[in-house]
Length: 285
Image (tube, rainbow, N blue to C red; front, side, top):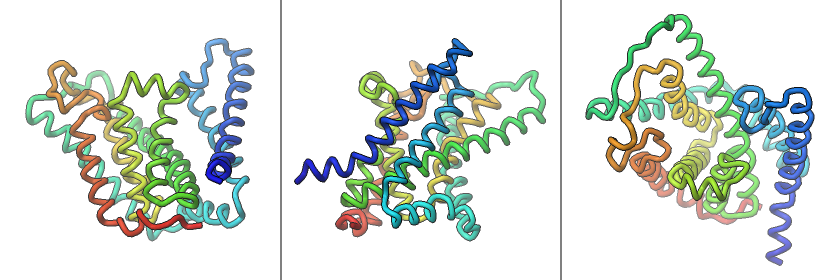
């Protein structure tokens, strides 16, 4: 009985993942015939675009395997919400909140001498503004894509079979593993602090989705956290000190920093306490 239930849960995911793998191998083989240096996972521009399109194709196959009721709710949750401008304030509220939290952490590092300001040379202000606007658009699309995949699709699917808190755990684990594709086990062993940071981020985003009940909140939170990094990469006006000189609770890659893990943990505990009745309820089916 347990084996049958497990197979029923994972079958649509397995079919979609298998087709994604086959399509990725086929595209890699076809493109390298014309562009020998192309690597669908390593090419930052074309590779990412192609792989994102393949993921959306795989996601479509997953959705087509679901009931019409699930498909209808998926459409309302992931596409139709964009037309509901009354919820747009949630995006900006969450974006500004988590953007400021990220910026305040970096500002504290500067205040305590753990980072330094850099001179922006040989780059026009207009060019920087253009890069930041494009970076915002790219960040929004990244956040939209990942939130549709994990919070908008996988979490509701798992919550149909499992208790919400268990569905949150499984979705967060999936969020972490996908970021370490195609060799998650090896990369987790090598970069365990990053794996912890990604898992906690996924857990927090799931709880925000449950609490706010709107994809706008998740996209705003996700984009706000990432956009600070985009600004620093484009403008390069601030850099943290080297990892060897930073205290144990910080890291040049903040995803690995224990202080960030602790902050995510505090938010997670607060949201679990706030929504404990929902999180520990029985599955929705």
